[in-house]
Length: 104
Image (cartoon, rainbow, N blue to C red; front, side, top):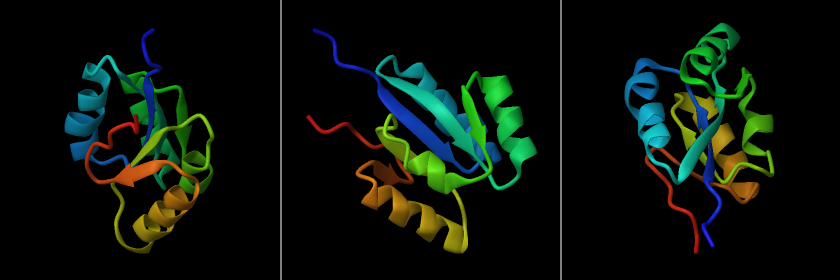
C-alpha cells in the first residue's frame, strides 16, 4: 500500500524559496506543498497562484499548527523564525531550513 504524501507548509516567500525550495518539493512525487506563508500577504498570494499552492497566509502560527501538515520549512529572519519554529516543534510537525523526512 502506498504511503500518503508528505504535506509541507513553507514559511517565507523569498526568491530562493520560489526558485529552489518549492520546486524541489513539487518535483518529489512523495510530497505536496499545501501552504505558503509570508508576512506580506500579497507575496504569499502571488506564490500560491503561480506555484499552484492551495493555501496562502500572512500568519505563520495557524499554518504550522494545522493537523494536516506533516512538515514545515521555515525561511524567515529574526524573531519571527524563532516564534514559528518553536510553535512548529510544539505542534508535532517537523521543522527546519532543509528538507525534513517523514518518520517511519
